[in-house]
Amino acid sequence: MEKNRVIEGCKVLIIGGSAGSLEVLMELLPKLTFVPDFAIVLVLHRKSAEDSTLEELISYKTEIPLMDVEDKTPLRSGFIYIAPSDYHLLFETNDVLSLDTSEKINYSRPSIDVSFESAAAVYGPALVGILLSGANSDGTEGLLAIKRAGGSIVVQMPESAQMPFMPMNAIENTSPHYVLDVKGILNFILHINS
Amino acid sequence: MINDRELEVLINEVFEYHGFDFSGYSRASLKRRVERLYQLDGFNNLGEMLTKIRLEPTYFKRMIEEITVNVTEMFRDPLFYKVLREEIIPVLATKPFIRLWHAGCASGEEVYSMAILLQEANLLQKSLIYATDINPVVLDTAKKGIFPLQMMKQYSENYRISGGKKDFSDYYTANYGFAKFSSDLSVKMVFSEHNLVSDGSFNEFDIILCRNVLIYFDKELQERAFTLFDNSLAKLGYLALGTKETLKFSSLQKRFKQLNKDKIWKKTE
Ligand SMILES: C[S@@+](CC[C@H](N)C(=O)[O-])C[C@H]1O[C@@H](n2cnc3c(N)ncnc32)[C@H](O)[C@@H]1O
Image (tube, rainbow over all chains, first blue to last red; front, side, top):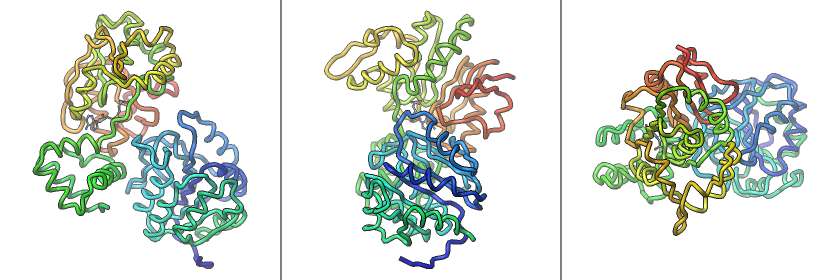
């Protein structure tokens, strides 16, 4: 762990999570009371055919405006984007989001690995990835891709996670730059680009 | 793994040798599809893969099948079909003759769903449903109207949510794990190969459905497809897209009016 890695030049913060991650976001989001100079993308495992309750829940908890994600939606700083249910969320080189209905990966669509890998290929060192609580192994490959492309990776401290498996699996396989509890993650986000 | 430059080489070769132009496909998704096939078929380098694509027509066919995404369902997004049933079909009913086009119909589940809606409204007799795709393999399945029996439970549930009142199993006969849909439904269907990248308009339609196809295209190719649809729609005709697709980012949106929140646009000019 590099304690003093300064995060600057971040264009996209991508956060992945599964079971137990929504609670973390509900705690974090209300405390983000600034307009970030990067985009925030959330990739959460959610039930398929689910309606827009997750979007509503999240927009209710944050002052940062939520941008509805449709195919080819431009990705802009200062907004939050949520991967829609039943689609993989992908990143194009011209700062545009694409959707894809191909096979589930790690039993999931959206899959965290798919979005992390795609974002890493486009944003490289300008990407920060955070992986939260979950009971699945999704996210580990994606974090590795982000790290390889020069981005920074953070994993929720397993002891602080409702479902420690996903973070634990990621820590074992990626040696992340930071392992942080919820408060630590908040602090980390507040210091991006500042 | 394949890098961006190699992907461009592959796109160029496929165009040069087979005349198929993937250059307007969304790179993020296309790269994943090509990488998946590369791993599935155990290639050691791109050269190996290119040689096989160049020299073996059957392998090229496999490639088209594998890199396009063909997943589909009957009454996919049932609430979309409910809107068709309750709001669009009653308008179409006033026409002497109804022409429909499913562009990118895959194995045809969507087309049979539409035929069921038309039949229940007593309109199938005066309808003609064109259904096209670039992939001849899925079109063959579509022509037969034979789908896996194990899917019927979900499809009949979708049908019910879409406002269907009948016994869904009346529409097919079950046999050896397959459900064969009644030929009463398929008499008004015309299936054919049509490539949205390179082929033109072939008729004038009252409604065009192109769902979950455009997400695989980049913005320019989407614009081409939208222009083609615009040219192929009668005045006041409808364009229906997938749940997460939109006309919003296109310059053609001013020629259309979106109905409520549903992914259906009416041509106004
Ligand atoms: C995901 S399926 C959509 C099926 C159906 N419309 C639905 O929404 O369930 C996408 C289909 O688009 C077809 N397709 C891809 N590129 C195409 C092109 N250039 N022209 C016509 N069809 C294309 C694929 O072969 C595939 O069958």
